[in-house]
Length: 266
Image (tube, rainbow, N blue to C red; front, side):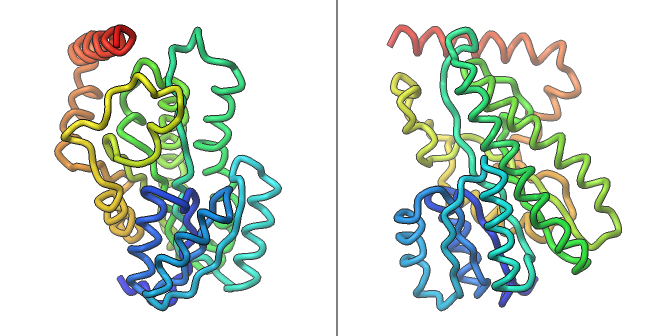
């Protein structure tokens, strides 16, 4: 696929997967729109990718706020006249059992991780349909397929993202517009820097670099598939869980509960 002059909008672009995705698209000479809450962090990323001579637009925006997303999309479309790829990457998690979590904490995760994706999709999809071209990449997680104790709200937001994307995938057939979900296992980003994860074990040897996931994001931007799981062999675990839940769920549940107990003792 030719990315030169494609307009790529990336949310959560100030670090991690979003930042590395911006690098990958800039290398390919795309016009990159960097979206996140903090201008200073976005400016740092923009400075990093200027060496690729790609046109860059920095736009501070809290995607959980519908009015901000609508204004951001108007600015992007007014400037570039189109939107070719939307990467819904903004998201965060808060660790803790449901009974100890504040309702506001649960709501905030759903507001950013799920509704932020919905707001951005709604903002750019009409133009893509008008163009009869475009692709939406929703960055989820393997947690979209496994309910993990301690991060129930995060899992719920990613389950919701995957379900929304699957429905949209079917709706968009024949329109020239596609949607693909990227679902990685644990990624070495700022995700665990939230204070709630202070007793959480550090990243395992199986965790991924954000650059690996960013390459999957680029691949997803032209893929006909609904979901790309990273690494691919984890798809086997998802298949087992979905096919034999009565066998797999008790095993996973016991393992997760043991891990939670160990964390509490640390």
